[in-house]
Image 1: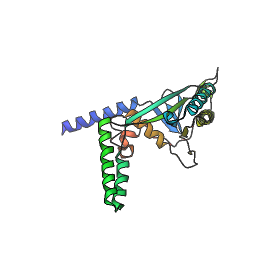
Image 2 (image 1 turned 90 degrees about the vertical axis):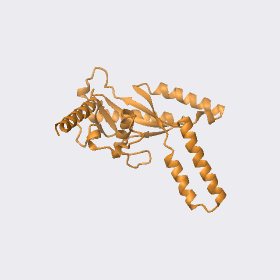
Image 3 (image 1 turned 45 degrees about the vertical axis):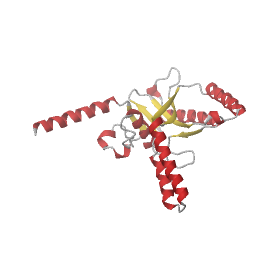
Image 4 (image 1 turned 180 degrees about the vertical axis):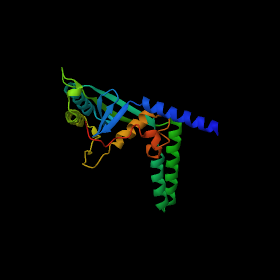
Length: 230
């Protein structure tokens, strides 16, 4: 009994130590506040297949990308998030079509395709990638961050995100901004940012355990708050 209590205490201390290491303090209005008092905004960029473009299209994309780099001269990082591709959803849809198909030859083709996808995934260890641009807020020169209103920080990051979307759209890229509304006007919760951070910080478990299934004890340090801005 004593050993059991001791192991439980050690486990709780380990969890608390891990939570203190996580650099995120708060997530609100599509903006992440770090424990260093930095504010960052993440936007996801949907890639285009450059190799499938014609030579003229490739040249146009490179020229637009050059314009993007010239116009957006502020602090930002390009981050690539890689993880093992999950083909189960795709193959499950094929199985659903298989159940509704009456032609035996078509059914055989579907089964062959499912086996092909599985074998390719195992042999090549397919990797899926997501691309993000992370913008960091910097106060104006000779201005302390403590003297800047929270609303001004949010507006500045939002304006920069709009500028990035404007220029990257000319390259053919769709851009998703994680704030109160998506590009189509539907709600995009701060939990999407939480999922991205969870996948980044927990590379080992993220592919096999969804954030929504994790105990609250493991994720409460990252959970977005509902308090008003200071």
